Structures are given as structure tokens and as C-alpha cells.
Length: 262
Image (cartoon, rainbow, N blue to C red; front, side):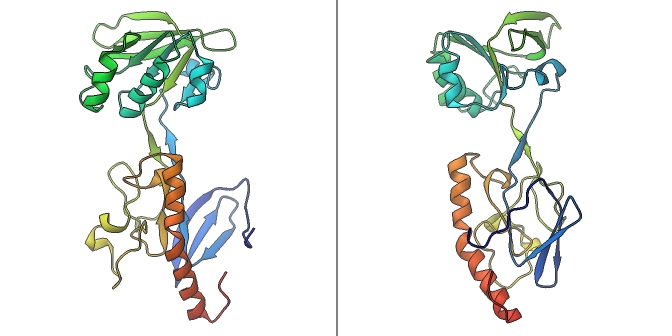
């Protein structure tokens, strides 16, 4: 639609400016050239690194949380690994359906990673427990998750518990390692855009467009961007936000080259 070309079974491996255009290199060696590039590469979930859990992904072990999972887990015991607001919100939602919900965190308290209002809500819900200084070290089940092995980091003691599901919510890292150094990132690798760009990184006379990175003509939308709220609706909205400047840049490039805008 709209004259777009979709390239399947390939990934972007490099990006470089070349004259007034940008060149994206694909994994098969092919190159795509355009005056504007929009990066919407998202994030990759952080893994626990437990082989038994990886074998059960999708069969009781999930990365992230889905509203639809709550009713499927009604009346069962569920564990959540993670101490951030997303994990707390998932625990609150699941507690309305599940027999029991347990938050598993490596630290000694939720106070350093979760909002106070959410901690208070969790404290007063009778079927939510918080296991501090604890990590998941093993799992087992016949075709799907049935038990977890929890280890207390202080004592080193292991405990095998019944579990119908494990939701891993320990954040993610952005897929930005393939991008050039000319695109500014924060300390975690998320792409810096518009007003957050360091002055020394921006050489053009104009101000950066909304969601434009430090490499002019390259925009970042969705989870890969620093400061994004990590929600599908917000990511789609950011994609719409870049449309006006994208069209303007494409039209300018076409005018400079004296060719039709595509």
C-alpha cells in the first residue's frame, strides 16, 4: 500500500549517512537508501538465564504480562519476577483472578524500584506476597510449568514451590547496538531524541524535529527511544507524530534532487 516495499526475513545491520541520504544495510548485504529513516526496533526482554525456564517459555513461563493471561490462570498460584511498577501492576491485576500471587525480587525491598502508592496497594491485598532477596534458579513440569525452585540469596537455601505460571518482568534492553556512534544514546543504550540531544551532538542551524535523533533525518519511536512509556498505543502515536516532519524532509530531498517525492 502507498507504494511501500516490505522486506521479509531480513534484519538491519548498519546505518550510515551518504551525502544527503541515509543508507541502511540489510543482513543479506543489500542496501536501502532514503532521505529519512524511522527506527522502531523496540527492546529485547532481559532473560533470567535459567535453562529449565527457557524450555518452558510459552508453557507457563512468560516474558511480560498479558491481560488475557489473568482469566486463564484463575484460581491458580502465579509468580512474578520483577520489582518495578509494571510487575506491581501485573500483580494487582492477577490478584483479582488467581488464588495467590507472589512477587520475587533480588533486593531487600520494593522501595527502590516501585512507586509508593503501588507498594501500599500490594501491602493490603491478602493474596499477594513479596519474597525479598530471592531468585528463581530452576523449574520443572510435565509439558508445562508446575514447580519453581526459589533460592534465598542470604542463606543460600532452596525451596521448591507449586506454580502454574511465572511472569518475568525485569525490563529489557534496546536494539541499538547496530547503529552508528553519531546517534546519541543514554547509559542503557536507549536513543536520545529532540530536546534531550546534547548541544555538542547537533550541528544543524535548525532545531531537531520531534523524535529526531542526533543524526539528522533519523527518527526513533516506541520502546527504543529514551523516555518512552513502553506501551503499544504510545508507540503507534509516536509513529504518527513523525509523519509531518518525515513528509517535509522527503519533499525537500526530492526538490533538491529534482525528482518526484517517494
